[in-house]
Amino acid sequence: MISFSTYSKDFNEYLQIEKNASPYTVKYYLQDIETFFLFLQQESIHDLEMIDQRIVRVFLTQLYNQQLSRRSVSRKISSLRSFFRFLERELIVTMNPFINVTLPKASKPIPGFLYMEELEKLFEINDLTDPLGQRDQAILEILYATGIRVSECQKLTLGNIDFSIGTILVSGKGRKERYIPFGSFAEKALNTYIQDGRQKLLHKSNIETECVFLNSRGKPLTDRGIRLILKKMVEKAALTVHVHPHKLRHTFATHMLNEGADLRTVQEMLGHENLSSTQVYTHVTKDHLRKIYLNSHPRAND
Image (cartoon, rainbow, N blue to C red; front, side, top):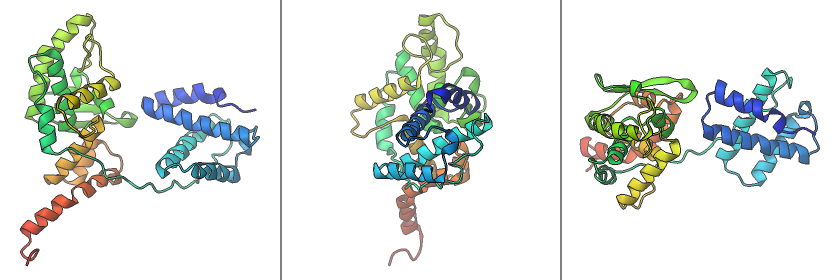
């Protein structure tokens, strides 16, 4: 009987160390592969070399019968393709049965974003005389100013911030680095927090850390901590919309495009490998473009 536990430790290390995958990616990849191994047991397949196109088709049929979304099926195929690529490299299998499987075309939902009135309410709720209030304001400003992911925000160090030219150096997916500019509001919030609030928080822990954002005990914030901070800000602002860090990323991209930024520039700042990932935001701005057209074109209205 073949068991995923035989390979899980090595594959886990491969994802974390060599692929620099996020904890969420690792978690779901391992879950997806474990699901596949349960399927193999049900089908009485005891040798990885027995897995061929027919077995793969049966597995995919089961997934579709469970009425999983195309996005979920695509992720499982990607997980298994990576897993068998790893097994090939380790000379455990001689072929990757998922290499030629076509990913189902996922419908891309239009990303949600915040209007300026909603943003203004968030920007006004923090107590800027309090260390935690200063920190929360700096987090909010930098997420909206740069469109970085919450994991990238959590990893920011003091050395990543260059106040002289107003940029941050971000380590993104796959250890790819990029520079992103930030404006005067983010600069002021960061400066206030780093010079005042962060120093006070640091005294509580007596540890040395270059991490920019600290928790109430003076230790580096986690991804989850940043999400909870934003959740509390939304509650204080009495907003009825659901706001998560990624929505601020969507908002950054949408507002940039609405104000005339080109797709390539936004792609670079978001750290998207493919332009198609950035193009999803153009759907959000179509109403805005139509308003400009109707107001500007001589023959748009009779």
